[in-house]
Image 1 (tube, helix red, strand yellow):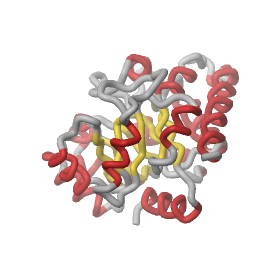
Image 2: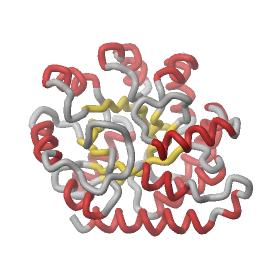
Image 3: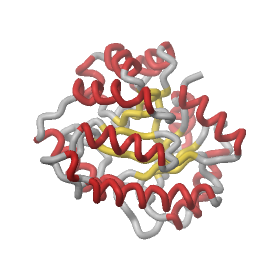
Image 4: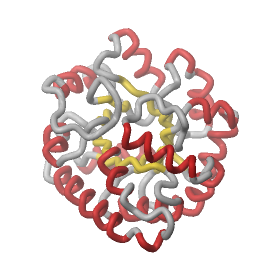
Length: 271
């Protein structure tokens, strides 16, 4: 059982849902990323998703794309991110996932990437640009390392392909709430709850919903049908206000992220 499986088993036994924040590794600095991970967990995050910056992200909106560009321009690369995670994850009481492009995994070598991520304390991978039809090898590598390989299902995924993705997924299903890219939205589709209910009838895997979620109202809408809620762009936007030149001068941005996360975890706990 992976750390992700264990977490969801514990949450189910307690009747709780997972709050899963996303942050970009290295934005505004790796030191700040480490501090934010620890702070988010202290505010009630059950699992954290760390984006590995890539020059051509497939589904990320302008906020996350801009954060990736800033990190790459600062010269921060994969090995430095893994080193930060090695130093940070032992103190976290929550699993960490990496959202990573298949190009990065492939270039490093799939086995080598999984081994290095595992050694850095990573519990699972989300590889959004890896087609399920081409995922067999990475599935096997992750399975042998007891690491979850989370795959995405969207509102327009055909039924037959949905079944294929379910069979290829471990940890949880990442359900994309909207057709399009990441980013804060004022409202979510009316059919979203019905779509997730339909998906739940097809799988016993936990279902976590992401893309566009940013308010306590969104969480209260989705918590009854979700096993977890993923929030990314709204957090990344707040962190973008932190200083890139002095990691000690980012207290206001960190306080804003803490306060924001608290509103979301409180909403989730009340559902």
